[in-house]
Length: 145
Image 1 (cartoon, helix red, strand yellow):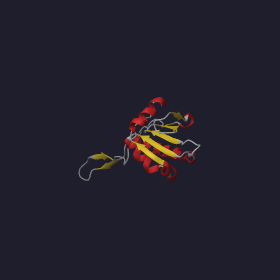
Image 2: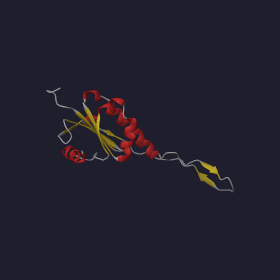
Image 3: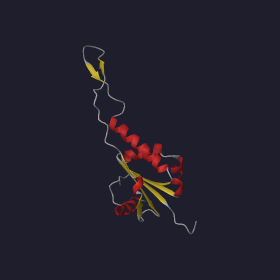
Image 4: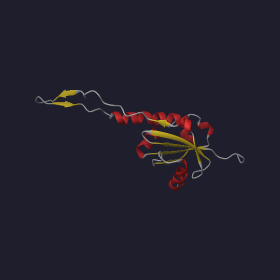
């Protein structure tokens, strides 16, 4: 592999958006894959009233809280989609770097395919989604140990 430069896939995500980049080294110039950009839709609106239960003593009634808030469930579905998208075409890359907001990074770790985990070089618990490509290379270099 001496004549070929290394290809690194950089996945940047938070609960509402994901971007995919390519670079030859961390801190080097990055190229964005515009066609692979993902955006989560608006959070689902809760239009119905929560179900009610009768209190065990007296006439009081209480709402039953959901196990997971609708916004959190939508965010998790979106991050599963991002993990699947990271696995598509990962065989073309030598290494993978994942940058995500701390909470989103935990969900991504759970759902990344084995092919991505094998190539995973680094994880950064930072939200770089809104960075421009030229700012991103400097931010990655600063975040790298």
